[in-house]
Image (cartoon, rainbow, N blue to C red; front, top):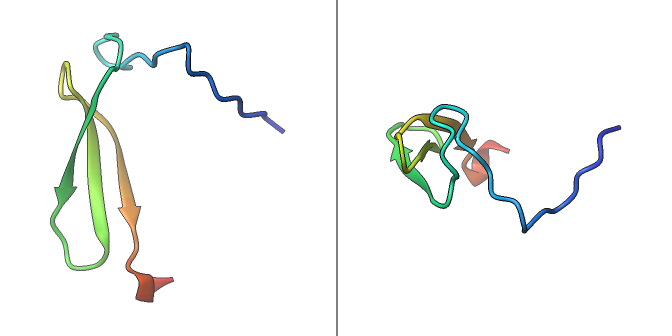
Length: 59
C-alpha cells in the first residue's frame, strides 16, 4: 500500500514546462451528461487533467 502525506511546504511542478504551479486554470467542457472540466497550467496552458463529475441521478 502506498501512503499519502499532506505537504504544504512543497509546490508542484508542471510536467510539461517545469514551472512551479502556483495557480491552476480550469474550463468547463460542453456536453449533455454530467459536468466535465479540463485543468491546465497557467504558465504554458498544457493540459494537466480532465475530470468528470456525474449528475446526481447517474450514480
